[in-house]
Image (cartoon, rainbow, N blue to C red; front, top):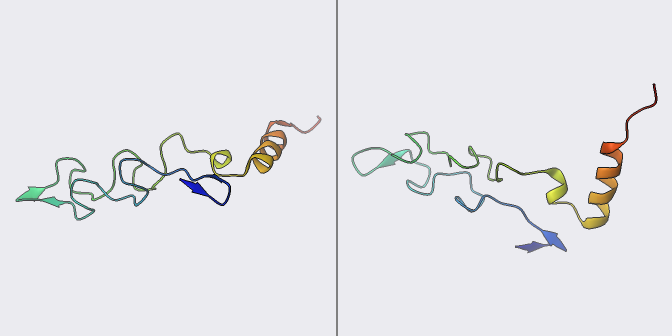
Length: 79
């Protein structure tokens, strides 16, 4: 989804809510614990964060800020 001129990164299994898509976050499904989340109520793909496992800060930054972040992150202090 476009958001403020950049791509917003969310977990596609839970649509960014962090809740299990099978039970809706209750941990219960029909008569027992949810088979997808094993009763935790959390999305098993993102572990309840709402972001995909490969989430990186540079994924949600505008392009110019992402380039600056990567440049700063790569540079190492002189010994």
